[in-house]
Image 1 (tube, helix red, strand yellow):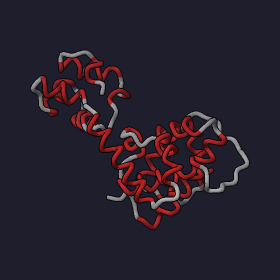
Image 2 (cartoon, helix red, strand yellow):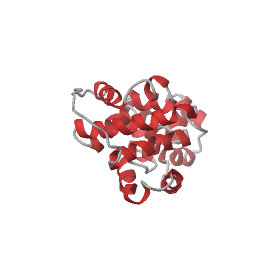
Image 3 (tube, rainbow, N blue to C red):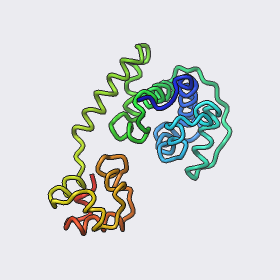
Length: 211
């Protein structure tokens, strides 16, 4: 299911491309800026197809908002996009991939389609139809999901508990247990108290449930 109406797609692709390209130039490199983007609310709103972000703001304005939200200091840097850099292309195709899959940027990144992965594809994919990129990204995500073992789910099943029982005994909400097991939320980023509560119920060490 697509993330939002296709009428916004061209704007979204162009704006994300400029945001990453400008962000990489003005704020210390592509990887550093992209990590800021992933933890910002901008990535979530963009992924939901909020028109204010995907079409109502320029890529440079988006970059400045990312810096504001992640504790950085926005700066003005002279920028003229040629639309030909590897970072620009990576942002352009990433917006398409997020729209096409309907998955969050964070999840796409966690499944192996990182900014570095996309930049590495630039020499072989940037002149090809975007469907080739989608196929390549899909192969990577499938491999990563197959390799990913959810340790919380494994420990819970070994203890013979249902998700509901684990939630009741630990005091952690059922929806959070489900999110951790389905990799919608990263349990390694949960509060220490939450991890400890779950580990105690499962009679294991905290590190045993960190995927």
